Amino acid sequence: MTPEIEDAFAAIRRDHGADSIGRVERMLEPGGGGPRHPLQKGAKWILPGLSPTPWHDSYAHPELVPVVEALESAHSAIKEELESAWTVQREAFSDYEHYLARQENWKALYLYRGGRLVEEAADTVPTAHKVLKEFAVDTEKICPLLESHFSTLLPGASIAPHCDLWNFSINLHLAVDIPDGCTLTVAGETRSWQEGCCLLFDYSFEHAARNDGNRPRTCLLIDLWHPETTPPERQALTVLIEEIRRLMGD
Image 1 (cartoon, rainbow, N blue to C red):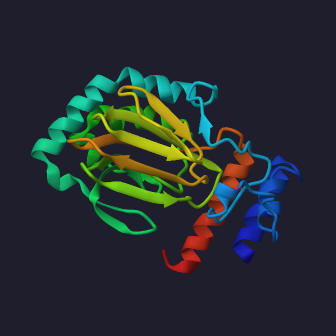
Image 2 (spheres, helix red, strand yellow; image 1 turned 120 degrees about the vertical axis):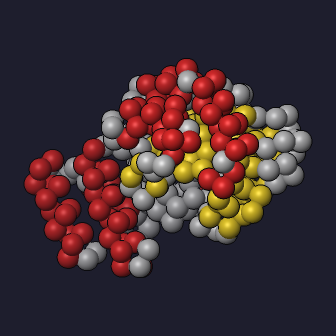
Image 3 (tube, rainbow, N blue to C red; image 1 turned 60 degrees about the horizontal axis):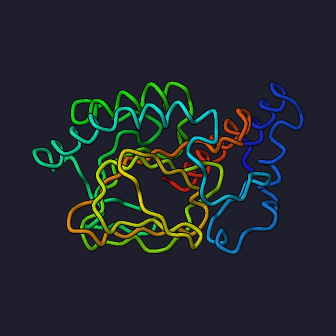
C-alpha cells in the first residue's frame, strides 16, 4: 500500500475501531478474498464475507428498497423522457466504453460519472436525474467509484460474458423499455427484464446480455454499494480505488 492509503486506513481505524476495515485489509493480502465461485474468477477483487449470491431480490435489502420503489414509481415519466431524448437528442448518447471494449451497438446516456452527477442530464432526463440524486446520491447509496447511465442495446447486439472488477458494489437495473427477445444471464441463469421493474445482481459473477428483439432495449443502470458493506469499509474502498486509479493515470 502507498503511504497515502496507509494514512487513510489508520484514520478510519481510529474513528471506527481497529477491526472496522479488517475485511478490506484481508482482501489486499495474497489470496485474501478467500475461495471464489468459479464464475467469479474473472473479478479482480473479492471482499471476503459478502454473500456469494448472483441474483438478489430487489426488495430484500432495506437500505435499497427506497431506491427501488422510487425508480419503479417514476417509470412512466422516465420512459417518456428517455424516448424523447432518443428521438430528438440522439447526440447525447455515446458508444458505451466498457473496460473491455467500446461497442457501437451499445449506447449510454450518463447521469452520474467520475464521482458526480452529470448536470447536463438534468435537462435531458429530469425525472431520472432527480430520483437518482434524491434516493441514491444524496443518501450515499451510489458507489462513487462507478456510475449510473441509461444503457441502450440495439437490436441484434450482445454483450459478451464477462466479470466486472469487484463484488463490493452491486448493479441495479430499472427496465425502462424492453422489447421481446431480451435476456440477461448471470452465473449461468438467464432471466428477462419486466418493464417498469428493477433487477439487482452481483456483477462480479460472469454475466452477459442480448437483444434479439426488433427495437432498442434500454435499462437505467445504477452502481450501488453492496448492502452488506459497512460505512467504514466503503470509505476505505473509495480511498483505495481512487489512489490506484491516480497511480495508473486514470
